[in-house]
Length: 196
Image: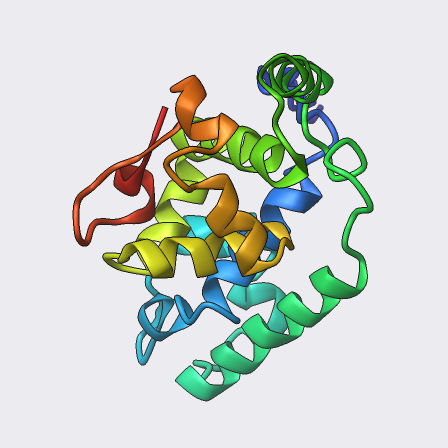
């Protein structure tokens, strides 16, 4: 008799699999932002766990005895990104983010006068500092200047660069509230540039 594998609820509120919106951010970091240059190697994926999280198990996409080329893996990654964009969630909640995080960010945003970009940046920073998967993928972007942080957040979160720049400016409600800090380091990875 086969034993049934017991499943446990995900403490992050992600019972229905990996959140769609986070998978989309990860693919945006790898494809439009160029993290794939370090993620796709001539020997395969640089991080098999990330590949599995993104649904890129080589065994599911290639013959068992076939060793896919770097170009074939890059094409698979681009196709996954196109599919994720085509099926992008309309909201954070639709994308599988825990309702409590959305509610808390909204409450704080209303209290401090955050705009939509500021609320999204706050929630993203919480997830960036909480989930290894996001940190691992954004590490492929390398060290980022302030302008690169702005561009990265604009692409990941779907806001204009102008809105993100305003949200990260010294006098913005997000920065003056002290909940998120854009560190003054000239160049560091995304996690270390955006501190909670």
